[in-house]
Image (cartoon, rainbow, N blue to C red; front, side, top):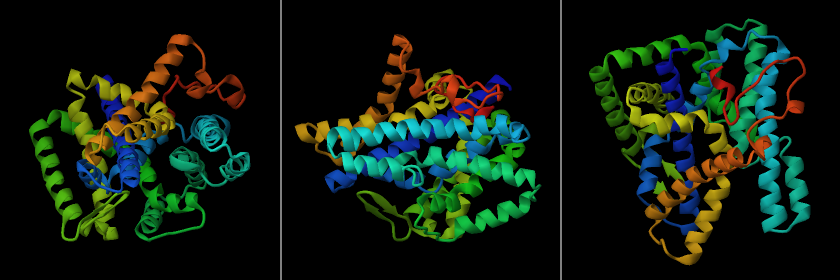
Length: 356
């Protein structure tokens, strides 16, 4: 792959993971302070496209592996995610219920439930494994792309609520994953066009920013400590349109930023987005608890920003410590026994297989 093209994909992943961590940090802070701050406005603006962008990028290079034998495909697109889900679900549950709450009964219950009901923020990792299985099955039966997209769009438009959280989230987001898979060539060409037509691309981004802001903040916008009530953007067809256009806008922005050497840190974050996603809740909760208990930061906006920064930096420090000590690689890299025999798939430490 062209190095510049690879760079913008990683930058897109970096922007996506930052928006996701920012959301959790801001809403977690608001929930515990009972107030809102300036960070809530940033999160509100990104609400329509924050998670859809993550899934579009995750499906972008699916075509490169979907035709592989089941063992090779499952190792890279199913077992990969389920391994990290299992490891980190166990870590988070044991820390919360076994160490901090000291409730062995609740810990056991949560560990069992985590097998069928994704635990906490790890639902995204769990869902990527499910998406991989469904996409492979659809490929095997040669389901028409237009039919899958039409049906999944209807699921995304419908206010689906199921007792199973994974079913609810599947209905909400499979459309975007499959969209990234089907329209990958067009998305890559759009990024190439943006890099060759920078003034027009920046103008298009400016137009999207104004349109998205108007539809999110008008006419009856309301900020709550742990969620956002949007304006026109909450209407399902408009929400879907903003989700798709916002995902494409982030791809264009990433393609433009890839030309700047100063964006190297975003590229690094994108290459290690799985590291950050798996581990960010621990420093997020620890820092927020410490900051609130000391009373050093009382403003909800400043506290939310501080919690966000801590949540982003914490996993990076852990990753670098593991790299320096040469121990604990199993947290971010699958050991040999966790691969399917004969699959010959090897993913570098801390990286998602999404770009391969």
